[in-house]
Length: 457
Ligand code: UDX
Ligand code: ADP
Image (cartoon, rainbow, N blue to C red; front, side, top):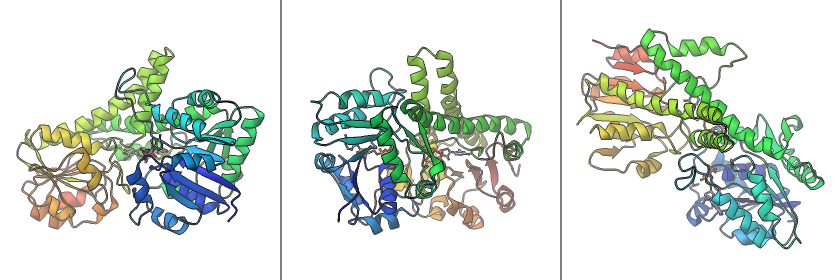
């Protein structure tokens, strides 16, 4: 078949995989190929067992794979054959050298730019899909212009705003598609070429055009603002626990003000995921590099509050269990950083479980999708058991901690769970997921986030 254009995506991760699957689905006239250095990951994308879990994704991949959607490890050939290249590699927080623990590690982005330059024999549009520090396009542009000059490159920024667990829905119905381009003839043509792809399914008024730097920065700022809301309500949850105010009632009351809005006001054990911490630390670091110390400190506080919320959850738990969890079994319900994903990156469960282990608690961890990833964070041992069946995980435990808002946990038979646990049985709802009055009626002592505990003593 003669395809109108050939799209390549470098990086077959949580962003690259689903995004390209939707583009292939919606643009049958384009050939879409996803490449990665990780051969195991590519093999999984080619198999019946995709490397990531996202509701609705399997079906879309299976119906397009082999038609106009391909997965490969041949990056160089992919580059040679393509007209449009999305760069969707990881930009983790640096763990070494300058900016360790806060700056973004952009080495993979730079490497990809060098590979694109080395392999290109025709003009390309190169699109930053990965979340990158503002002005990364300048670095990419400089590298891409450092060749012999026979091939022209246009660099665009097109950050991805999808959230895990709802990736397919978010990609199909985005609030906005942001495209940043340079104000040059090449930049404008490239922008419209990309807009045409999205035009296959996204209403034209949702495609927002900006300069490259605004686009790069807007992605960091979007995540910073979202995370800030979570930290803000979590800070209020601590005050609610002291004053008998109920954080859910407070959130509801303030959320009715359209200037505030009701979403992202769910108090809990803190935010996780691959983006929020990384992007805020990066934003703060960037502010610091421009000498904006007050601004850096302001944003850094969002992460400090998140760590504090997780520490506070553990302290509350230990206090409620008579100041010791040593030798006690704690059932941990959920390890994913949120529901509907198997992703455990920066999940609050990691910090909470590590602290409980430091206190010599024994853990019985369950999760519908994340057990495989969880084992990489906290290895299985005599004191840490991974158990598929939540009823089995709760059996004989002194306490049960809800760490992820899986809807499956709402529908369990808590009477049965209560009967199988040590008494007094205590439930710590780190997501305010369950009906706490019903649990209290059953016999549990119930500790929620930002609400007075319900106890039988
Ligand atoms: C986020 C952004 O939402 C998305 O736009 C961006 O592209 C990537 O980062 P994601 O990390 O997948 O997406 O999940 P999100 O739904 O934002 O949740 C992040 C964390 O915040 C989760 O741990 C979630 O449980 C927590 N959260 C969210 C709360 O604790 N309370 C809330 O009210 C909302
Ligand atoms: P995200 O959540 O942003 O999608 P992931 O870590 O899930 O991040 O995916 C990024 C992918 O990019 C990984 O599968 C990684 O192997 C891949 N990758 C990193 N560097 C390169 C590179 N130089 N060439 C090709 N793929 C790369």
